Image (cartoon, rainbow, N blue to C red; front, side):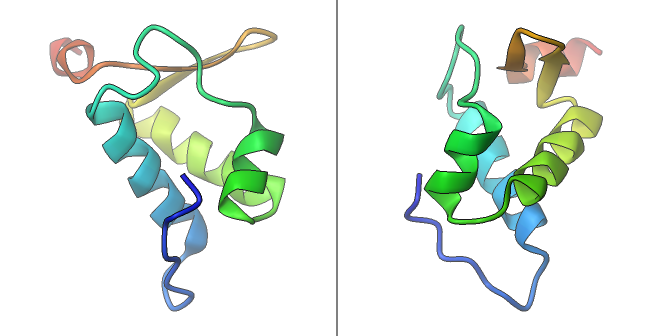
Length: 83
């Protein structure tokens, strides 16, 4: 996951959001929750607030659902299309 080359001329949170969306669409984390914010921030070498912004964006696009106290879960493409 840390292999993403970040382009500092674009918002980093957006690049991470795009990377996570690609991984979700590819079935990574299918049936399991995403790693926590601290773990993701470590893997991408960014601040936790950057990961929070990326996750918030993924929530608005329907890629994830956040369950308070339980974590962040991927929403498969088929479920997003059903709306």
